[in-house]
Length: 279
Image (tube, rainbow, N blue to C red):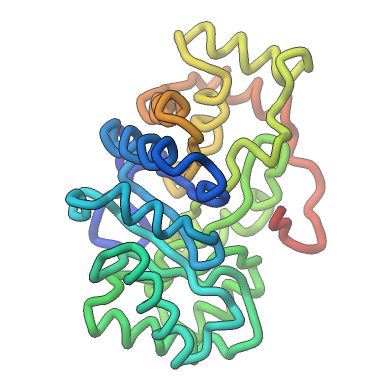
């Protein structure tokens, strides 16, 4: 599995990780087995959140005995992100995850509490060794500018955003801003929400054709396209060990410039939206 620098974090992180949104809806033993299989194959970047129901509990079970091998990320809900609320939320997440620390802790999206208060809580947690870095999620450029001012230069590890073949809005301004400021970009829902290109569509046929050239799958090709720039990571969810293995296969895939150009044309960027999409 390819690893890359993750913003200012002094540790390289797996380019393909594991998302856990709705993973608690799956059969618990199967969900745990999927996460463990992904970890076996190098997908050591685990992403979860307090908003995700029992996902943190599932993750805690999956990483038991292997915590040091995992780059573990969770998120605080904006409504909980006051100074005291952020600390309390982190403590709850740590308890559910059965660990003493997070590798990165994110504000899930901009909310009602001043960023200065949230980030002061993050720094307190970092001083205590309960988090090793912190970042944001679903932040557009004006939000990022405010976060940079509130948190200080070089403090924001990542911005986690919606990014898939048919939703490339971050490429207009968010991704360039993050690259210019040394902030990692983490793509959530990299296959869309039940919108992955059908094999019968032109885009779907192209994915299948490129995949065949590499002995890969269409989903592996899609993931590799998304992480083609060194600032970007992806966190697909897997519903089974077999699905996890398929996701992991994207970590070693290499697409040619011509293939990337064909995918870029088949799934055009489109116009910049007025607001950064979240769903």
